Length: 162
Image (cartoon, rainbow, N blue to C red; front, side, top):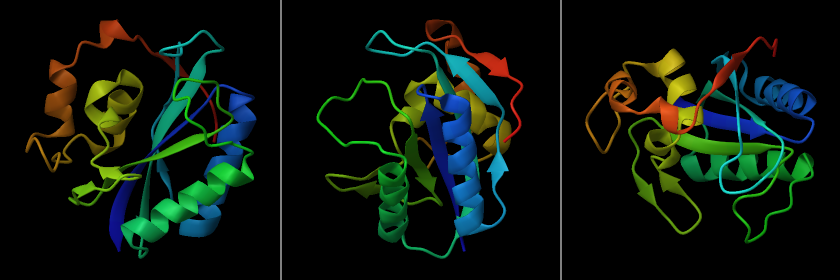
């Protein structure tokens, strides 16, 4: 079984969208470890605040098969894939880390660069995987968080039961 970290986010009916996504992850993968939920302003466009969290799952699926499952969850939520990157979303599930795998395919890159670029990924990831060693940098998530300037994109921890 592979340990995998997923980033989940939504700014369209975010509570219901994230609850449905977590329920589906539990249905398909069993136990799911969740970080706290964080509220943040959207980046790159004007819109409603996002709610984000990180989930850890265990899976026997290959990385490509898991990616396809996640794409199916996006479609089920009504997400339309398009060329616009910075838009409001009912559901966004990003495959962040899959064991120590490094992948560079057109549609799938691991580890996902978001892990080290955005507070709404790094902060919740550090909650549940502080000791995880980034497969490219060789540094722990806690070390990356220590060096990260969270003032650039502040987060507000939310009390939300998923």
